[in-house]
Image (cartoon, rainbow, N blue to C red; front, side, top):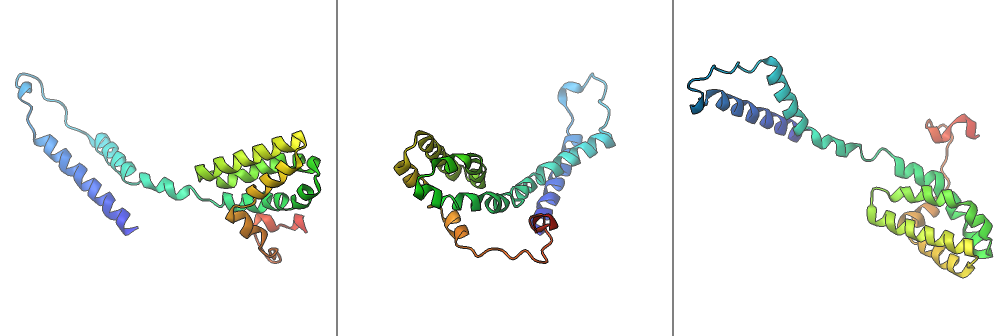
Length: 175
């Protein structure tokens, strides 16, 4: 925060110095023209607001993570992990019924474009193979989809204890 404050003060000081130098500069072509009105408070405040917006523009990066990936994994991950038995038994109807779950789980990687594209491609190929009834291809693609370290570690976690938890995932409606 101190670094940000220093950069804001530096930007404001630079703006004030440039405004002072611009006011002292006498244009040579204005010898026979009426003088322009001096900048008022409104222009000064607009300039200060613009300098502050430019200095504080980096704050938007802090809002990128609001817990969406974790919520996405908690909500859609278990359904995809439980598909292992359906994939092993060749139950393609169960796999196709989870199409939306695959799509929603893929958004876990939306802030990592390379991983997002990879997982989306694998899941689309998996669903196409399931629609065509290619059980062997579905098994290999499902194994490839589940190779992501995030899915492996999530699958090995113990069930969460939700007693005395105050969040939207542990509400009274789920008991």
